[in-house]
Image (cartoon, rainbow, N blue to C red; front, side):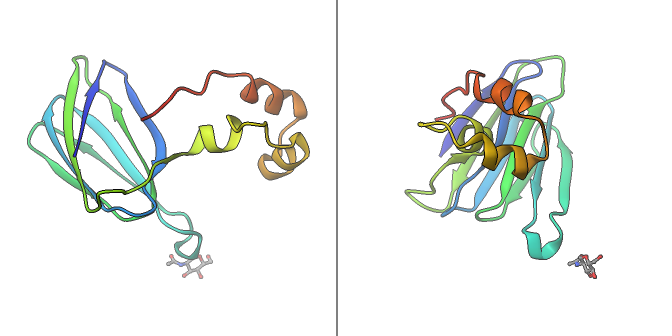
Length: 129
Ligand SMILES: *[C@@H]1O[C@H](CO)[C@@H](O)[C@H](O)[C@H]1NC(C)=O
């Protein structure tokens, strides 16, 4: 299980659990949650605003997030279907790698200037554990 405490505006950034389904219960506050389907399903984004007492399921392996859109703190608990669900935070896994991923790869992948890539790679990608 995971407890997540959200400050107002707090974000659990896009991430995936490769080996676990997640069931989230909102205990306090208001969360905008969402997940994105696979390429085969056209990377469709599903979102929902959850209030106290609501429950949401994030399918296994899909990229998902939770954002506190309320004016107060929010609290949720998640159950995961594996003892070792894994965790890959997308921004960290792309722009926060050690050593840094080649700018040639990232400029082409994201169709942006090297300046943008340099900026993103210089950010502090926080530990999302
Ligand atoms: C994905 O997009 C293609 C092309 O627009 C479409 O033919 C297909 O039905 C879509 N698939 C799904 C699952 O929405």
